[in-house]
Image (cartoon, rainbow, N blue to C red; front, side):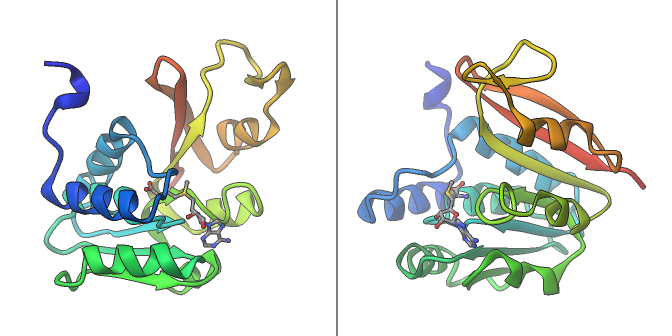
Amino acid sequence: MDIAERAVPPRVVVAERAAAEAAFKKSCIPQVGRLLSLAAAAKPGGIIAESGTGAGVGTAWLHSGLGADARLVTVERDEDPARRAAGVFVDDMPVSVLTGDWRLLEQHAPFDVFFCDGGGKRDDPQRAVELIAPGGLLILDDFTPSPDWPPRFVGEVDELRLFYLTHPALRATGILTTPSSSAVIAARCP
Ligand SMILES: C[S@@+](CC[C@H](N)C(=O)[O-])C[C@H]1O[C@@H](n2cnc3c(N)ncnc32)[C@H](O)[C@@H]1O
C-alpha cells in the first residue's frame, strides 16, 4: 500500500468532498493533516485555532485529534468555502467556523495550537506569534525544502521562514512533509 492510501478520518473525507465540489485547490495535504492531528491530540483541553479554513480539510484533520475538553475555532474570509466548511461540522459543538478576517480569532486567544494558514502568516507574523499560549504550538505549511542556512526560496533568503525559525519567543524547526514540501513547527517558550 502506498502511504497516500493510508486511511484518513471520515470527516476529512467529507471535507475533501466539499473542497472538490467547490473546486477549492488549496487544502492541506494528508502529511500536514497528520501533523495537525498530532498537535491537537497533544493539547487535549486546549484551544485549537486555524486561520484560513478553506473548505475545512485542515479543520477536519485538527478535529481528528481533538480532546474531549478542547475547542476548535477556524476563520475563513471567503463566504462560499466558509459555508461549506461549516456544513462539515454542523453537528459538532466544540467547532466554530467563523466567516471574516483572521483577526476575528483574537477573541479566542491564546491558542494551544495555531495552524496559521490564511491571514496572519504573511501579513502579520508577529501578531500570529503573540496569539500562541506559552507552550503552545504553531504550524505553518507550504514551504519548500531548503538545506541551506539561512533558508532560501528560489535563490533568495526566505525572510518569512527565517522570522519564524529565529523568533526569540519560539523554539522552531523545519520538517519535510514530502520530498518537495516542508512545514515549520514551533513551540512558544513559557
Ligand atoms: C491555504 S488555504 C487554507 C487551507 C486550509 N487551511 C486547509 O488546510 O485545508 C488559505 C485560505 O486562507 C484564506 N485567507 C486568506 N487571507 C485571509 C484572511 N486575512 N482572513 C481569513 N482568511 C484568509 C483564503 O481565502 C484561503 O481559503
